[in-house]
Length: 86
Image 1 (cartoon, one colour):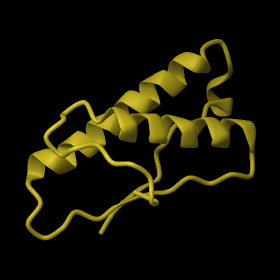
Image 2 (image 1 turned 90 degrees about the vertical axis):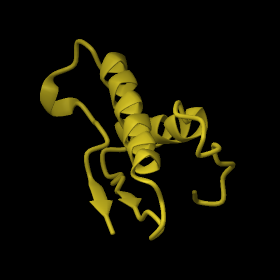
Image 3 (image 1 turned 45 degrees about the vertical axis):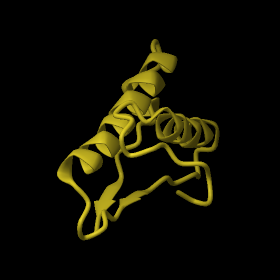
């Protein structure tokens, strides 16, 4: 993804991808003009479980972002919600 190291598809936890999503969320938290759009384009023969692993990594990153923003008004919270499937 974006030329960065990738997790192996066999690792359900996808720590590198989760970390990447978290970093993108933190950038957007610090820059009100930032826009993060997650584009997911599985290969034709990709197994459904691998796509679910990506979505699970996104969910983990969002939970961490939510924890980091506790005590702030909900309208100031930034979560990675702009997801596009191709």
